[in-house]
Image (cartoon, rainbow, N blue to C red; front, side, top):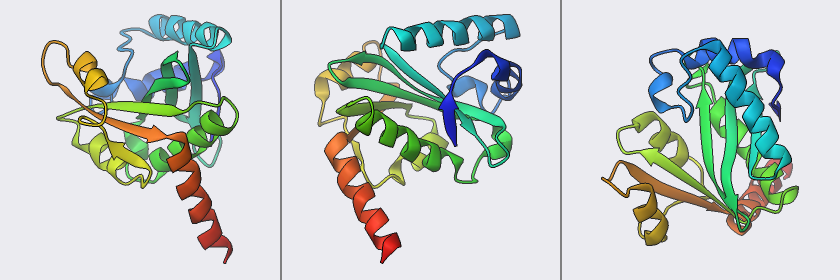
Length: 179
């Protein structure tokens, strides 16, 4: 479902990234394949420096279909960035990728809080995050962070996922499946 980034998948990902339904919402708006390759190399270096964690989202066939990153990691907290190629919209990949990534973040990397900033007009992403039972609308919970992501104008809503909330809810979901 997710795996560490590598340069071999950049061509497939760059093609998916350039779709007009995807491109406006990605963090790195690369104009060329070479630029995307450079950005991916930088993400791999940042992961070595522990300021970022970046994974490729895979479909059932093991083909790359998007990326999920935690960036600006400070004091066991960071911001989430996710995109999935348009052919894979509405098929559950986003939620499964987030659950796998959160499990890794909270259990392996000991992250405590994941923030999600979502453009107010990005209805698809807002609906996706609101389906996650452990995600909280955080504009009022974290007014300092909300203000910092909207320093010029209010473009983003803020959501957050806390380690304990995720682990408690995901454990409950696993228990329901087992019984």
